[in-house]
Structure formats: structure tokens, C-alpha cells
Image (cartoon, rainbow, N blue to C red; front, side, top):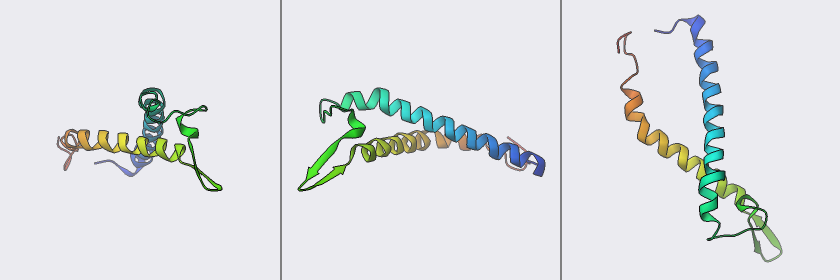
Amino acid sequence: MVGPENQVLVFALAIHLGMLLSGFFDALTRDIVLPLLTPIAPSENGFSKLIIPFGTIKLNVGDVIVRTLNLVIGCTIVYFTLPYIKEYIPIAGRR
């Protein structure tokens, strides 16, 4: 069991790991996934700057697509790794 003095450390490590994973998913999407999508929807300024004109309105959909891809990649990795992570959760101090 994690004592009260260690809970702050565990929480800080969880936040740091979340930030690292966010940067990893951003890089994975930007450097691997988006270049594969360029033939489908080319844009001069990159995929994240993709604009769809809708009459007099310009819809900036590129960033939404990039963030959605990040979310899908993150959820997929969590979905496939969660059963293995659950095996290592200590229950009553045992593994």
C-alpha cells in the first residue's frame, strides 16, 4: 500500500508520464501518420493547417484531425496494454 508521503510522488510521476506520452503521440502522428495521409489530402502548410472553404466560412479542420488521430492512437495503445497492466496491480500488498 502506498503511504500518504508517497502518494504525492506517485501523482507527480503519473503527470510526468502523461506529458511524455502526449509528446510521443504527437511525434508519432506528426512524423509517421500524417505523411502517409498527405496523398489523400495535400496541404501546402502541412496537414494540420488544412482548411475547407464552406461558402464564405473557412473551416480549420486540420488541427482537429491531428488531435483526433492522437486520441485514437492513445486509446488504442491503452486498450491493448491495459490487460497486461492490470496483471501487475498490487492487491493487498501482493503481486
